[in-house]
Image (cartoon, rainbow, N blue to C red; front, side, top):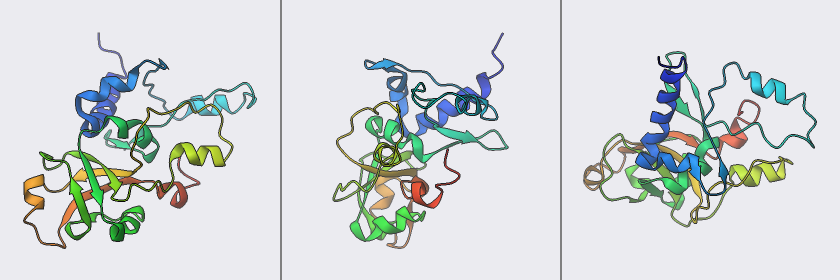
Length: 200
């Protein structure tokens, strides 16, 4: 017998696998502790956690994404710090296009700095700045807001700005028009400011 939550759980893991490939096993099998994926319906766990005193609560977990009404899994920017260290495909944007991406726009060919070789079309990618300047991350933001017990994400020498889906393959990116979209926007760290009230 298949557990009732197998379908949604498999869909959520497929969403993560789109960005990090077979490295998805490394999200759970980590040397620094025991981790697992949980499917929360109606956020009952978070409501129950609200009744526990802050001093006693370590953390209810990190939201990796949400399911749409059609049962498709959509990754959230809160998963970025966990997915980035294991990303196989990366895109670097030029300084002039960083702000545009952080406002939720797609990456155009004119703003593309570099792209990982052999990136296929519609492959999940993590987006970085060319200067590799950290703008903000979930962990820095949690520290500023007084967050407790989020744990540490896997160490990542680069500072990701967001993630998306490659609209063109590496070879196609070399010969497309400068105004063509090369990366479809999915999430960016600017959402911590834009969607502060609804981001959970």
